[in-house]
Length: 198
Length: 198
Image (cartoon, rainbow over all chains, first blue to last red):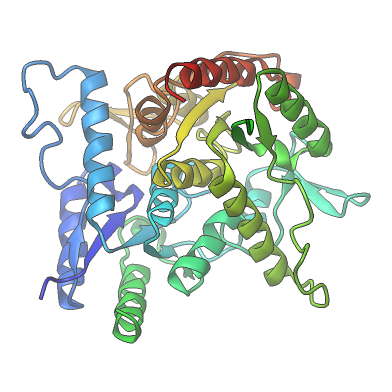
């Protein structure tokens, strides 16, 4: 029987040793009976006309490779650790939406436990708007205060499409984009979910 | 004949006068022959059991209302102006992925013209990694340098699914989340696209 496939989304693709992290994730997948699909697997220009490798063509090839892997995957595990701001990596968030739109199961983790409001407060002075009963950022935009890890569309999609809230835990700063404890918890949740209703 | 419907995604839902901005967007949609669906339309708890309105229940109702509007929409226009970091609002990006996963046409605009690398450079000291030929942020993560407005998944999805690159223009700082010039350009592109292949 074919092993269920998991799309391995996350900002670790930007690490200097991205391939090594991808390999560790795929080995963990195998230990839980899954096949992991890492976004950097394979050459994006493979099987394509190799003559023109200009920027425009490369980015479209990378996009298509990721989309094809998401379409092939049975489910997805998303590293939603905050990235260059209070929210998760935009590419990972896009891919979560895409996978949900395709009707697949999604699991997610963050290596920062604090909620979205606390993290926004660390980055900017927020003001309480008593009339509308919300916190506002320096642009006057309301800051979500639901105890979620991120924008509610992200947190709730995981509950709706995977049955579990985001796995949130703090790790050592040096391990922010390397620690796979939350990832492994997601693998366990995915395995238990598939055992109940394949 | 039913007017084509457009999902109106963007961080303006967080403005103190969000409903007024939504109304202006819907009026512009009507002027171009579309019906606009604004995320805040209707009561998220409408038709639902009104007894328990706790946080958990509210966020799931909001999520479902947005997802239902995206499923109902024929296409989407996304306000991808940078929000609390170098990337677009995470909720808007999730919704873009969802709409693309549902196979619909997507158009997008940003009220900041500068590319992703320039914006990252304004926020943090980047270092050039000559060995791998990339810029790196203080966490050692590569910064995309393709001239795109945001993560390539976002920019390329618009080209693949709407046929046009993101509409990027600078606006007055006070109008950052109010200016609808880029939005109106997207409406024109959407109308022209539908006229060619409905």
